[in-house]
Image 1 (cartoon, rainbow, N blue to C red):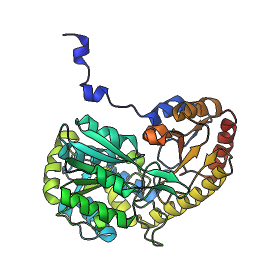
Image 2: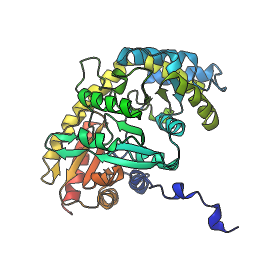
Image 3: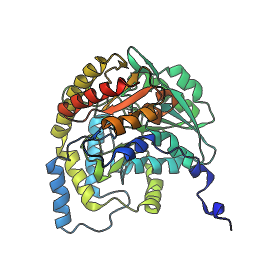
Length: 392
């Protein structure tokens, strides 16, 4: 047997490596670097959540749990989803080892080789590359950027959603742009997908990080609001963003009950179950974390406004305040290779940003900046960016 025959299968070899990681790997460990490349805050998980995980460990909860999650967490999530989006039972929920794991499991359940998958972009690269692992044919529909920020030509999306399409993936609020699909567009897309028998996979990771919602109840429009459990709609979510729990690796899936039954099998054959002590922390987050979420969203909105104003003061930058998520995705005049530029920002100016090209070809010429950081760090970062732009 030749060594080449032992390598990964072609679909895996052909995956595009993450350009975000490529930049981060060039800067991790550098003293003095300002890291805005990943989508996580510079603060630790709220203490009341941490204490629940610690208490669970001390109580000896170090054993396997139910494939679909411990009963208290599924019950808490059922109440949480119902409060935000309407009726939801525990039979519609599966707990997963992170939001990324949730996405992978749903894709394993729904996608067969050669299936057509449509993804709205620019988007977190995992959403485009993930279906390719299963042999899917991925078609992207790009958002447009203008004075009003990022917008979707919904007719262009409908044209791409042919009867041959198996799955539509929508991340809203969107990483990296912050674009949020309006309710009217969701209704048009929902009706079209019903007629064509197309599944909708909604990545709702940032649904609570939404700045145009009702005071005290910030939540973005969701396909769960306008669908029933008879529809081909699956929502995946995570504890990482709303509750600042990136390192805990905990997520969930909301889906029609027959699909949940099959997802239980896939969970067994992937990770078996999520850790019990992590799930206990999740229960505390969901049941007692509304004040923490509201505080975090208020901080993000203030940071967003602070950063966007300062970015637009730079002559080469065009930035529009996003309605959701935790990123400024701004256009930089004169930058045609965002990966090379971001790597140079790391090595020459100790500034860690994510290249727009990481989120698809339509992101080239843009830069993503996670603004979940203190104003002092953001201001320092803008000064470093200004020095870097002088070399373009």
